Length: 200
Image 1 (cartoon, rainbow, N blue to C red):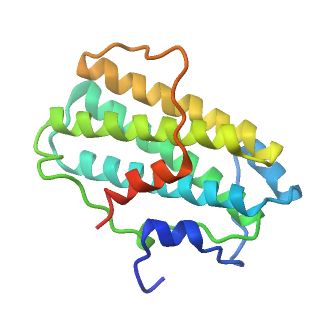
Image 2 (cartoon, rainbow, N blue to C red):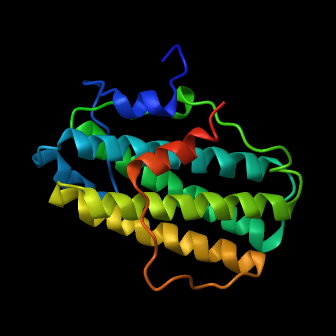
């Protein structure tokens, strides 16, 4: 795309077309089921939102790894999260392609972060913890509200991994590893507003 799109614009638009994404690997098999399912507009809005959240996570992880501030377990964690979030994005993109939609890519959104976010390992991990909590809430909100049964399983699987990521950040920051017995889900508008704060 030649111009940058706001996150809100990505949620509103529903570009149709594009090539089908080839998905391989046992972990992505569940995503193929959406090819046979009619996906309503409300569910497509959630998929666009989750794609944007994964793009934010990937951008954060890329910058964190390039900062030269991470070492030891922190560097290893961010590398693992980058692999996981790449798999999440690939699966979500496959869902959108199966529904005849074109997923956003890293070229579609410019992200920005609060000053000092990458100044130290501590600040990087703190930002990562914030973004992981946002992702958990976003995925739980999607699981709670999705109308397409075929989407709930794979989105729930990603939600579980996002919760593991949040716990890993908590461990590195010296926070409690286990949070509330009933993790909070976030409404789509709240997630959208939170993502907008990281947009240039």
